Length: 128
Image (cartoon, rainbow, N blue to C red; front, side, top):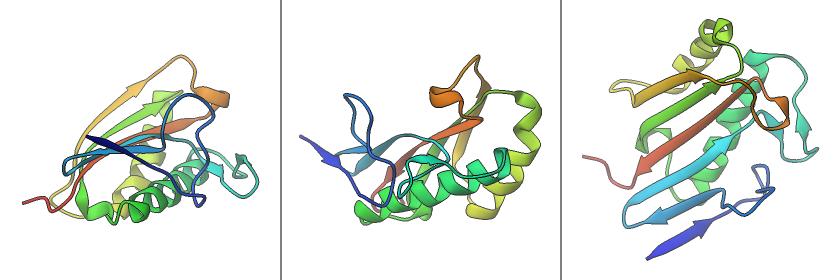
C-alpha cells in the first residue's frame, strides 16, 4: 500500500505527482527545486543558494514522514550545467555525514522552471 506525503513547508506539487510516497518502510521524494514554498519563486542567487533551499525543502518533506537526512540512502542530482557540480557538492557535503547515501549526478538539457539543480532522494525508515 502506498501513502502520499505532503507538507506546506515545501513547494506544492505542480502536477499529477506527490511530494513523496511511502510504501512499506521506503519513502521516495520527488525532485526538489530551489523554490521557497512561501513565495513560490526561486531563492535569490545561483546554484549554491538553490541547493541550500533544496535541502530545506527535502528536510521539510522528510520531517512530514517522521524522517531526517540520516534516513536517506540514495540521491539523484540533476544539474543544468555540470560546471556547477563543485558548488552543488560543497553544499551537499554539509548536509550528510558518513556513511553517505549512494548518489548519481547527471547534467540535463533543461530542468523544470529553468532550475539550476534538482535533487530527489530515497529514504528508509529505520535503516540498518
